[in-house]
Amino acid sequence: MLGNKNIRNLFLGRLISASGDSLYEIAVIWYVFDLTKNAFYTGVAAAIVMLPKCFNFLLGPLIEEMNKRKVLIYAQFFQFLLMLSIPFGIWVGYESVFLVLAVMFFISFLENFQGTAEIAVVPKIVEKEERGKFNSLISSSQQLVDLSMKAVFAGFILTIGVQNIYLFNALTFLVAALFFSMLKVKQTNVVMKRKTSDWTEYKKSLKVGFIYFFTSKIVFICLPFLIANFSFGMAEAILPVYANERGGAEQYGIYILAISLGNLAGSLMVVKVMKFPLGFLMIMLPLLSFLLWASSIFTSSNWTSTVFLGLAFVPFGMMRILLITFLQTSIDENLLARVSSIIDSVIVSAMPLGALLGGMLSPVIGVNYMMLISSLGLIAIVFYFLLNKNIRTLPKIEDIKLQEQV
Image (cartoon, rainbow, N blue to C red; front, side, top):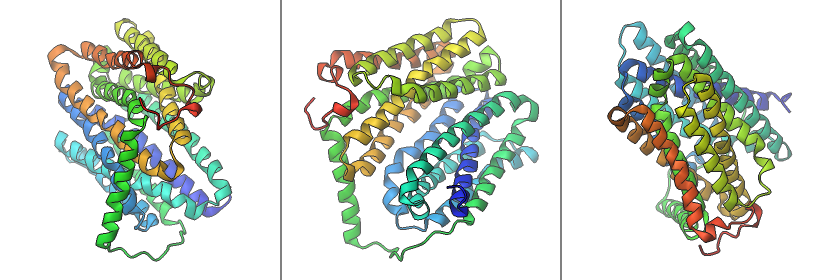
């Protein structure tokens, strides 16, 4: 399949772009902490990265009318210029947390266009019978790249310096743009100017998706994932401060690597637990995650703490795949894209709120207590399922009937 030059350019462009995305989110958040030594600003930084993703559901219909190849090229090129401004600022002696926060917001905003365009361009390049294989290949490759980049950050942040990490990060966006520029995509003639009726249809389409979301069991099943993301957003914001108290930049990198490994392990192991009812899993998985997370806080050994924190995110990885599988098997096919984008936006919306709250409260009550409070969100999930009989008794994913009343 990769023998096809067009497919190979798309694959390499996405892979190189993913390496940049994996690196900048953790590197920039650490840099903000290094500049300010203040958990409030790391909370703001984490929230700014997440906030644009809350509006992803609005972009799909717009990108459908754009030239996907140009969207990919321009999104990557502008991310290159934005990211380059940070090492340039360091080089000229201008290190401003506000510059960093602005760069993070606009890069995250551009990623919405890029991600949607990447999905939309695949059918124009990859034959129908090859798309499953291509998506599987790119997904597994991106996870390996993500782990590799975080390992680089963990091992070399103090050796090569944050300025060089940002410079490398900027270059990944530029190289990805070059690969995307070599794509040959067949374009259809589309009228760029919408008519009033088109906008009416657009709003009607969104409305149908929201009605389906709120009148089926989806809203009740997604609530625990909303709580989980709130907890994770809080933890992500305070992790640089927490790691600094336990060892500094190297410990932060090690924690990030452990969390990534835990998520990956959960994604790979989830098939072993899918034979159990969803209600049972959504009690046991967050409970196990809480016990491991809390253990990582109370142990004095950094290595033991790292192992426990990594293991705590194995259930997180399982929960994420369970949600995706649930959506793919339970939602009407003609509504899947709309409803999935709504769910993605709704669930992600809890993360910036958690990040801001974590950043504001850490200086007041202490970062260790905030880490413990963030883990308590998992206990809230456990009680949510325990106290609702209909949700607690949910069967295996493939047996769930969405339109049943809860």
